Amino acid sequence: MSRLERFHYHTAEDPQAHGAHLGPAEVRELQGAEGAGGFDPFNSPESAARFYLEEKLVHEDAPALRAAVREDRPEKVPDLALRGTRHQAGTGTTLVRFEQTRKEIPVFGAEALVEVDEDNQLVSMDCRLGEVTDVGSVPELTGTEALDRVKEATGATVTAEELPPPALTYVSRDDGWHLAWHLRGVPAQLPQTRRRNLPGHGLDPSPREDFPLTGYLVDAYSGDILRSYGMTPTIAVPTRLEGADEVDVHHRFQGSRQDGSFLLHDRWRDIATYDLGFSDFTRTRLPASAIGSADADFGTGHRAGVSAHVNAERVESFYRDQLYRDGIDDADMALVSTVNCIYRSHGPGPQWRNAVWWNGRMWYGQVSDGTRLVSLARHLDVIAHELTHGVIENSGNLVYQDQSGALNESLADTMGVIIANWYQAPHRSDVRTWNWEIGAGLGGRGRPLRDMSDPTRTGDPAHMRDYLHTEEDNGGVHTNSNIHNKAMHHLLTSVDEAGNPVLRVEEWALLIYLALVRLMQTSDFADMRQALRDVTQTYLAGSEAARTATLAAVDDAYRRVGIG
Image 1 (cartoon, helix red, strand yellow):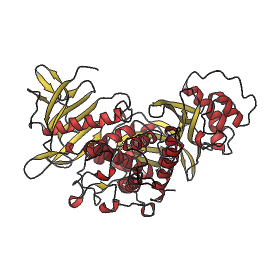
Image 2 (cartoon, rainbow, N blue to C red; image 1 turned 120 degrees about the vertical axis):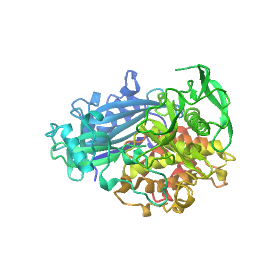
Image 3 (cartoon, one colour; image 1 turned 90 degrees about the vertical axis):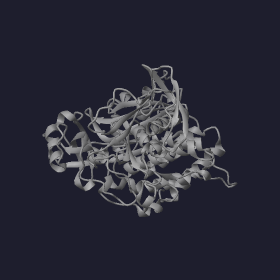
Image 4 (cartoon, rainbow, N blue to C red; image 1 turned 135 degrees about the horizontal axis):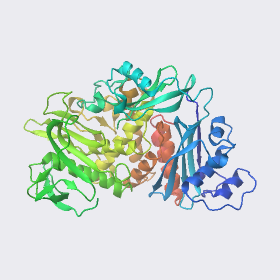
């Protein structure tokens, strides 16, 4: 049982707020505090968020919530350290995210999220906080000794110099609070958590499975492993290029020209595609330049590269144009793809049946169709899925374990299917024409990897009563994700009493994205439902009928899969 207390508030759900956002005077007045007037304007969303947190949490009954603001210095909310702010173009609001600390040591999984409008008035807040007690702050083991315990348990040979520096953190467990060393990016799992070849998951291994980046929390006194979790998941004038992809579709796309060659390098969007020539991508450096051609028409000579380049551009454009996100990290990071990869730990090649987001890049294998090798870059849904792992990694960074890990997988599936159908469905606005499969033909016996419309087709659960409790696959993240996938299918296909869609596809996509980026590291399915309700309250604040119908659709979608 977690010792973290939850606090959730939204002005739209507060009858005293009458649906309006609240300034400092109104918040004080609603809290029954004296001296509600005469406030100077806040100089930043952070200062506003800290004020509202103090005003709300200091009156809560739960000691964990009151402890976070510490009444000796409430004006600074000293135990909450700023993690970042993010402006939400879809709602016109700003999210301010804090991490809870005690004596400057972070509390694992303890966060506070405050949403303010353009006038720094309170819109909503969501907190998961703890009162750390009965534990010291000075470790007896060093970070290196903690790593040694992990190496003993996993057989890893990694050295401390190859990892991010270990950091102290407080961890809540059933038996109380622990001071722990937080080790990140360890390329090894505990034996009981390793994923096996489960039915319906037909991809070949990749280094993300064989050397999965894993986080470990090691007791700083006893050396016991308390918890592990998965961590995986310049402007220039462009040149117009063209060429055929892996399914013989001819595309026009952006690239560049250099030294007489035309390159799959869109310097405007910073999207580049390389060819590794069937080398092991874990042991080979990228070539000096992107895939090139002597002519602007690549013809059929670079099908894999054209597929990867066009599909990466599609995903990046959808996130930028429909969801108002500046690249995978929301800070214009380069989007690098590499085709014709093999992974020698699986086999000598040239076939490698996988495509993965790893080390901040996309890597594509290939399979034989009987006549030639075909790159997995042909699967737009798989590419959008993998790149969404990058989006999640750079947002709430959902812990890749149990329900938060399954939610991570499901949101990647959801955005993968939305983006693929946005470009490929006969009628993008009519979900009745959509293909709900993820990775068509890549699963066992020619089935897809997953099917959002019918998870049981691949032997996966579609309701919480069938939730798989296991230590394998980080707590069954690829299996249990299908429960939330089915909820997303209900949501995207929801209709009103007249049989009309509750929202347009692009509106559902925006709400799902806005909910995704406000999740916390250990959020679960129910937290995603609440996040969807929160963003709906803000996004549709001006239309009571649409807001009511959308909230009802959200609740119904989750209720039908057993998430209340």
